[in-house]
Length: 181
Image 1 (spheres, rainbow, N blue to C red):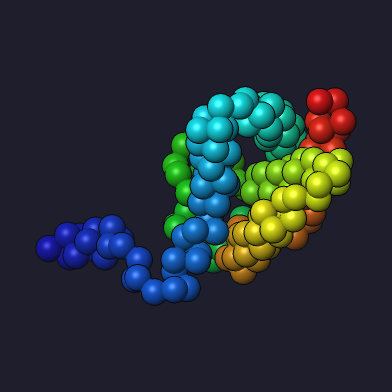
Image 2: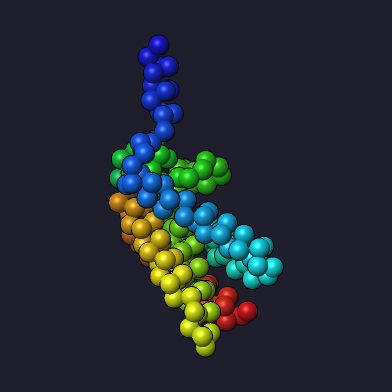
């Protein structure tokens, strides 16, 4: 009976309140933003999103390679978010090949790579457009990125150095990719 109640407690949904909605939206913001670009491109009839998506894929692959070649985080920091279960609950959106054990490797934050790549890529498009449109969209993306990264920092999902590495890698590849295109 005790195991049954523990399972029910673990599987219970989070409480519905504004803070939890913001935390949820921030944690899945890369998924929401990606789906927005795909749907916007599909409904507008252009394929610009494929170019962005391909560049993002390259940035994420570089981040994965750097993390895979990185050193293990020291044993004191392995329990980054108090313990493994807490880390899984607060920092991972989905379980898969890049789970909590993969996250014990030091390397660029994937969320930071995503946000920095997207913001730097779109910023260059806005700056090169003589009509100066898109600033409100870019500011919205910056706010979403800031909330996501602040919540991940509060939950100790990544060390600050990994977030900085991710921001630098994402921005660098975003700038290079936009210049190539």
